[in-house]
Length: 177
Image (tube, rainbow, N blue to C red):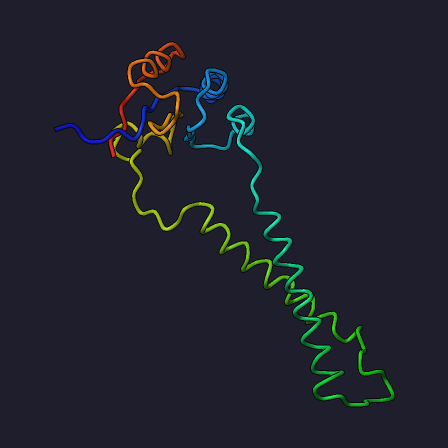
């Protein structure tokens, strides 16, 4: 009995081949695909038309919440709950609140980054089907891989395999779940 298919993976020897393959796959209509490389390739992001991450918006929101929370907490303590007149200063002596406000801004922005990345990246994921391909061990050394997932609406096993072969892939392998 055959195992379910995750997708097809093509192996390339150079980053340029991988970028061209990703552009061709996107042009052909494939949208559910991923690329694996031992080094960062800036052009690959554009070739695959990956949308921008929502992470910066979440971090900004977390930072603003930390700023408002820190300043609000200090204002509540100094002006409402326990007002002290020290040296004739006003209860809302905002310059004294700046260090704590800054620290809570950084703290909440950092925690928001961590939590958002965990959810956006799909962690924890101790196993991924691409590790079933024997040659994938070269992805961290000297080879470049493009995987088109079987969930893609345009995916057809034979046509997709032929398409990947036309891109001059070193090898095209089936990725089983």
